Amino acid sequence: MQLDITDFPLVWMRRDPAAERHDEALFAQFESLLARQQAFVILSDEGLDEDGHDHPQEARKRAVLWMKRHKAALRAYIQGMVLVEPSAAKRLAGKAFAVMFGQFWGYPLHFGTSRDDALDIAQHLIKAWLPPREGWQTQEHLTKP
Image 1 (tube, rainbow, N blue to C red):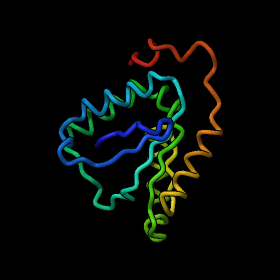
Image 2: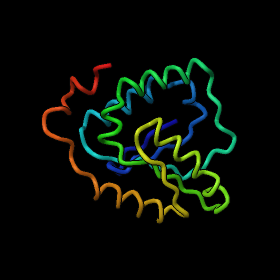
Image 3: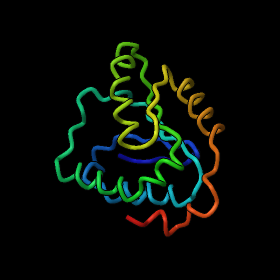
Image 4: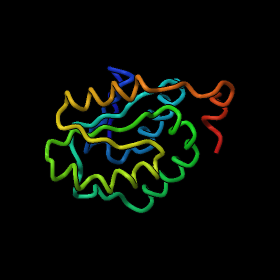
């Protein structure tokens, strides 16, 4: 995966087969985004991955441990993920996955019918953001397990 932060607070995530084995670089990019202590939305125009994009068990374990260390910051600053999915059937099928996704990652998964629709959803999510309470969002908090 690659992150494009050119349009921050809109962060585009795209698959990059060459970067598939560079999970640590992706985690570092996410940590850098969380350290900004600003709301952002992750977008992807690659739709719902029905193949499951299966990761090796070791990679899944690393992701779970990373998520646990950054749980509070993920919930505070990532306002959601929006996938562009033109297929109504895939959006409907994705609803159950979206519930599990939100419970695991701590932020909601939305589906847009088009790129413009996804951008509208993302802008709404950013506008609705309320900064976290003063004091808890220190850099130390972002890096504590």
